[in-house]
Amino acid sequence: MSILAERDRLVLAPDGTEARYGHDWTVLRGTVVSFGYGHRRLAGSRHDRCVPAECPHVPRADMTVDATVHYRNPHNDSRMRKLTGLDDEVLEHVLATPGVVGSIDAAVAFANGLLREVANKKLKQVRLAVGCVGGRHRSVAMAEEIAHRLWTRHGVTFDVMHLDVKRDLLPSGIQS
Image 1 (spheres, rainbow, N blue to C red):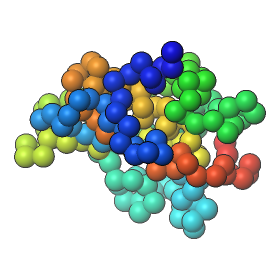
Image 2 (tube, helix red, strand yellow; image 1 turned 90 degrees about the vertical axis):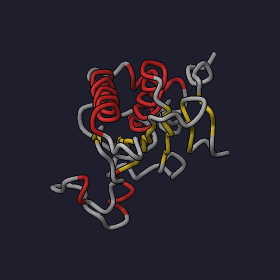
Image 3 (tube, rainbow, N blue to C red; image 1 turned 45 degrees about the vertical axis):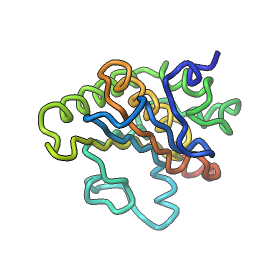
Image 4 (spheres, rainbow, N blue to C red; image 1 turned 180 degrees about the vertical axis):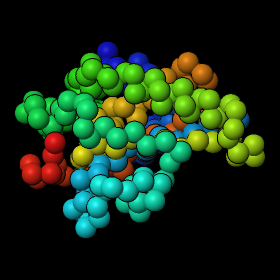
């Protein structure tokens, strides 16, 4: 059975770009967004030397995880290039990459702590973002796993949005 099929995941968009982990909107809730820095660079925006909260091309978030440098890129494996982080093979590959699980755990701890301790008392929501170069592999897999862990370990309902998962592959000069 598929890793994603075994999860308590409700697909919200027919094309698979949005999902919810959790049964309903609980008091504590949040959103995790995956995206590709490379698509923003092609649109004429720069992502280097800027603080994510101040960059118009990076989704606004309470925490942004940059997966462009330290983690193996499934795009470099021809068997996974046209797949996405929603496919089991890519998800397993990303989760087996050294450092990824630690970053996921840190994001989960941050979101859970923020929700329970300091989040806006009226809204009680947190927004996380995960970016990789193309927004199809590493960021998607990590966003899915973050939302899954927040729901299964902490009972926090999280929506997942994948901004670039359906976009065309980037030219090879942009991928890293």
